[in-house]
Structure formats: structure tokens, C-alpha cells
Length: 410
Ligand SMILES: NC(=O)C1=CN([C@@H]2O[C@H](COP(=O)(O)OP(=O)(O)OC[C@H]3O[C@@H](n4cnc5c(N)ncnc54)[C@H](O)[C@@H]3O)[C@@H](O)[C@H]2O)C=CC1
Ligand SMILES: C[C@@H](CO)CCC[C@@H](C)[C@H]1CC[C@H]2[C@@H]3[C@H](O)CC4=CC(=O)CC[C@]4(C)[C@H]3CC[C@]12C
Image 1: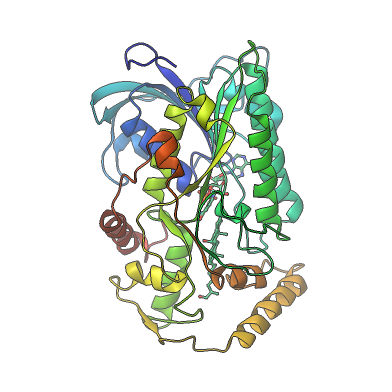
Image 2: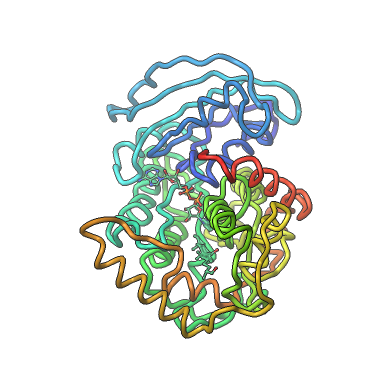
């Protein structure tokens, strides 16, 4: 990648680009990546928001320009998945410039679809994943999407000569572990016994390992692949479905939520805009700092306060009119453990009839009830990451989003 913005226009691919985080990564690239020439947005479900980009009708106006539907040429005989291209004019920080946005409806578990999307890309940001800790999907599907999907992305980079890969990992790769050991303001080198049984953290750990292992592999053309993994803590912000679920539940309960977790348990949270910014920075710096960043992991964090999961949510839900009842948990912990186990049983019994997947199960209870917070400057030292959004900004943006969409079906 060359240094000057004029020298080379880069092709970026964002897998999972229509998800909660992926959408923010896409928008951040369009706003803040001066060398962006083409942006490929790859997702299983393209959804309506890419269409809305053209009119700028969601989260402020970013866009002007036209759109057309036409197939991208099949590369090296590889059949292409369903593709829509838009030539858009992005209103970038440093001025107005054309960017080709290519929406690709595809499945990361299908190696040929991934290869077609990756071919010709300079950088891949791989955020696609199956985020399921509620028992909605089978362990097999979670493994296929998160592990085999990541393997397909790596192999596609190697086959097609793409050299830079940023992977969205998760704090869950480290913990909380099955023993519930606290991880208090830890960093990437803090010793911690990472032991998992749940399919989601197991799959993320394995996928992260694949990505880091692949660093240095020779890609087509003979140059080495450079990879790194970012490990966000619990992400919040515009588009966060669980936050909206809590809001709606609070409205149903007459404007109240009931404390279940002790206020002393700290749960790490990070604003989605800062997670997106960290991805953009890491992707930008991977070539220049390949020796330093290649094969590295970075916790993804910002200035969001250390609080319990519920107290943190109240930072947004409070200004939206909800109240958290109780200074201490209103039900004893053993009862929560019992209810969580009951939910597992009900899920199993009801499976032939319907999908029962409540928020409370033994895994989510353990995660919410175990201190896990990070404090590190590794990303700052390695590639100059500083949060783009202050805590006040992050909070305000999230509150406005909950107020705007919390009661609607959007
Ligand atoms: N939400 C959170 O708190 C955290 C999320 N992460 C990671 O961040 C990434 C993004 O997560 P979210 O945005 O929260 O989830 P999300 O579910 O909103 O986004 C994931 C996207 O991947 C797409 N996808 C799923 N299966 C696919 C497949 N087979 N082929 C192509 N695309 C597929 C989905 O359609 C979706 O748009 C995931 O890798 C997740 O593990 C990491 C830490 C915390
Ligand atoms: C016991 C309930 C009482 O109100 C609260 C249950 C809350 C849970 C649904 C969430 C608590 C912690 C969340 C997880 C955490 O933020 C880390 C995560 C990282 C990821 O990579 C994916 C999402 C998640 C597992 C996140 C999921 C929801 C919680 C378990």
C-alpha cells in the first residue's frame, strides 16, 4: 500500500458488513479511509440499510450518487455470488470522492463465494460471525460459520494474493472461563486460564488461532500474509439489539428493570464506533507496521466506565425513562442459577415445537456475573489507536438511538 492518498486506491472487503459492528466499520471506512477506492460489503443478509445509504436516510446523510445493478466479472473462473454495485460519492472527512460500493450477498461457509469476493481486494476485515450464546443455533452451525468461515477467508487470501487480514475476535476468547475467575483490568499479557465449553467462545478461540497462525504464510505472488486479531469486550451503541430488548422489557414492566447482578461485578464494554475505528486503523497500519503487528492480538476498549452489565445499561436506559430497582440483587443467586437451568430444560423440551431462547441461561449468567475488564495501551503503542468517540459522545449517540428506535419495529 502506498503512502499518498492519490498514489493508490485500495479495495477493501468487509465480511459481515451488514451486521451491528460491520455496518459501523463500513461507514467508518467511507468517512475516514482516504485511500478507499472500492468497498465490498459481503454478508449473508444484505438488508435494507445499504439501499438507504444512497439517500442517507439512516444515521445522518453520508451519500450522494447513483446506483446500478450489474454483475462483477467472474475472477479466474470462480463463479460470483449475488452482487450489486453502487457508484457512490462519499462525503469524506477530507472532501468528496467517488467510491465504488459493491454489495455481495454470500456465505462465508462457501469457499468459492468467499474466494470470488476476496479476489482483487487489498485488505479484508473479517467481522462475519454467528454471535449466539442463547442456544438459537446448533454448535455445528456456530462452528461452521465462525471456524470454517474464517478458514475460507484465510485460504481465499492465500489463493488470490490478498495480503492484509484483520479479524474481529472477542474478549470471550480469553474469558470469563468456566471457573468464573475474575479478570480485572487485564491486558493482552495478563495470565488467565482460558477454559471454555460453550460453542461460541470455543469457535472464536479456534478461529482467532487460525488467523494468527496464518500470519506469514506466502500468498499468491510470494509475499507474506499479515494478520491481526482485535478482541472487543461487550459492544454497545447504535444497532445493539440486546440493549433494545432490555429497553422494551423495561417498558413492558412499567418502566422498571430488576437488579439481578451485584453492582460490584465489572463487565467490560466498548462503543461500536470506537471498535469500528480500531478496525480501520489496524487495517490501515498493517502494511507499514507488518513486523510489529503481524500475528498480534489487541483488546478493543475505550473510555467507557467500568460497571456491572446492568448499571452500564442504565447509563442509556435511565435517560430513556427506565429505573433499575434494587441496590442489591432482588433474587438470590441460587434462584437465578435454578431459573437459568430451567430455561435450558425448557429450551430442550420445546425445541420440537418452537425456539425458546431467553437471555438467561447458565452461560450468560456466568458471563454477566464474572468480573471481566481490560486496561491496555497495546493498540495505542502498536498502531496509534485512541478512541475516536469520548464516553460522553458514545453515551449520547446510544441514548438517541434507543429513543428513536426502541419502541419501533426497526
Ligand atoms: N456483539 C458483541 O458484543 C461482540 C461481537 N464480537 C464479534 O464481532 C463480530 C460482529 O458481531 P455483531 O456485529 O455483534 O454480530 P451481528 O450478528 O450483528 O453481525 C454478524 C454479521 O455476520 C453475518 N453473517 C453471519 N453468518 C454469515 C455467513 N455464513 N456468511 C456471511 N455472513 C454471515 C450476519 O448476517 C451479520 O450481518 C462477530 O465476529 C462477533 O463474534 C466480538 C466481541 C463482542
Ligand atoms: C442475567 C441477566 C440479568 O439481567 C443479564 C444477562 C445479560 C447477558 C445476555 C449479557 C451479559 C454479558 C453479555 C456478553 C458479553 O458482553 C460478551 C460478549 C462478547 C461477544 O463476543 C458476543 C456477545 C457477548 C457474549 C455478550 C452476550 C450477552 C451477554 C451474555
